Image 1: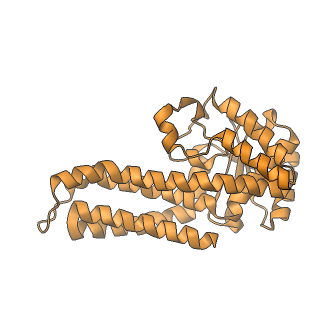
Image 2 (image 1 turned 30 degrees about the horizontal axis):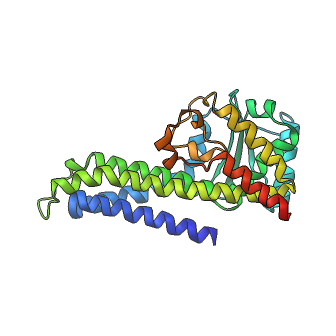
Image 3 (image 1 turned 180 degrees about the vertical axis):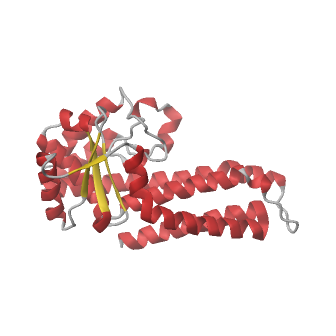
Length: 278
């Protein structure tokens, strides 16, 4: 079911991109948008993990370099019934973590040095269980590709005036409206998907560890730290990948409508409900 949902959303984003290309440049614009969408889907599918890991200077570790962390991930992967992912450490003092990869067989989890220092082993296990839940349900693939497509739609809208179709040229007013609204629409789709799947990954972590309170405690600590500092090299395009939004401390009121994560308070409250019936 999750694979079907992923394919459906990627198809919808591709069609949206083609629609924007058509409105801005007629048949020529549709063709360019279609080719660009195929190229970006293909490239993102095979290289999204390498791109994001490189951005954050993550380095892979094995059991010898990070025995405790490696053992935790190995245990969670066994419980989740997924292959052992590659394990990376990010040289950053701001505590955070993310997972990436196109499927469970080509997955990686990355954790900052700051998170390892801040959290207890139980809390680290809860965070890794959250990320492995994302991996199991292909959440990271869809988030990365959706972000790429949203950026592409914005790019097409910005350069829409350059499309010059001699037949059926669109109204300039329509072009301006599309240039403003379509990037926002693509971004809202990505963020809505991300926010919903954060709840599901939290629930998955609670079931994998059997201790929802571990993740509650971890989220509380991580949120408090994120409000005081920002992860190095963090970008809006990759913010949705982290367990806590690295820009939590920089949101103003209206931006909360477009944030990639539910509020930490809501996440902790939902985990409290899960704890009751577990």
